[in-house]
Length: 454
Image (cartoon, rainbow, N blue to C red):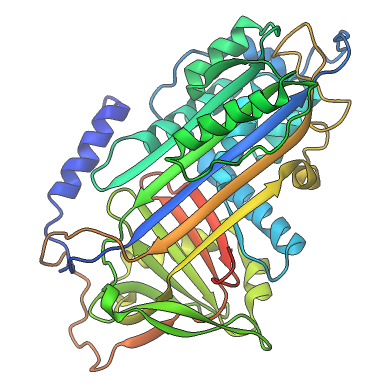
């Protein structure tokens, strides 16, 4: 049987959605999720590049990297991306106890894999190993083509959902790039190229911030506050995502309610409420938490993970890719878990801003920010090392939305629904995971510890 092309698969998916039948009745009210991110990798000028003795490293596969992917994703990519997302989150949970956390693991991993096109020897091996990518299972060419396919999947136009992943390279105007690195970054990651005078640090900062502001629809305007004059290259990666809930919240029901940050701290939040819908919901038998799945219009869904009182750390430490896969399987195929729920969810905005050069070395990326860094695949004129790396993400949830078709796709509706729906109130710290339905890749991960804090 011939292999379906990426476009054919997309048309097949869209036909399936069109034939799926009417959805549940929705009110003319709204929910909006606007998430965006920009990751900055700044590299500083070093001494003239010496010859590196490690010529037999993984960089040998650079010569085999094709210009385009084959329209598919290696099955190991999703597993490695999920593993990296969990490792990164658990590190930040330990670094920032009791604080809001929000980031895009897909954006971080995409920018690092793109950087691997210019890394060689041990530096490149650390990038792949740190991301959980095994070169014995898939060659470097397939890694890059898989990420290319993943970016194309995110960027595919969808009705009622906007998503865009992009990259940009800001280069010292006197810097000479190796043609292969320049061609591969454009072919695989659609990277835009900007010649930049970093001696004018104010002008360079303004150029980068204006580009990020434009690409993130004005939501991030101050990614870079100051650049050193010895900077020669800045790599920017961003994700913009906007989607509507399939089952929006009626705005007139939003009321101030208590949110219990911890045993000593209670804050007042605007709590959105809906009670007329069925939702995918379970309370885990083995872990003290409840899990709610909410779908967006388009190709994305979200898990809201609500630990029992005082059990946040226990749940965080127990999270594994296998556990997420089990929840996803139960909350998409088992009709028993499709229940009528009175749902109470805070209306909130949070953001996350992190210095990745302080975090990534703790996950095995030790050479990237040291004198041992080998980026000789970028240029043969300079010895580069990564000086700083910034990651910023914001999350905004409110009632803005659109009217959808009446009816129900509810083949899982319970025959004997209870008179009163189960009440599920997110009135204490919870976790949020947003992922693509078609690939199951995690777009965003967050912990809402206090929804009144930005």
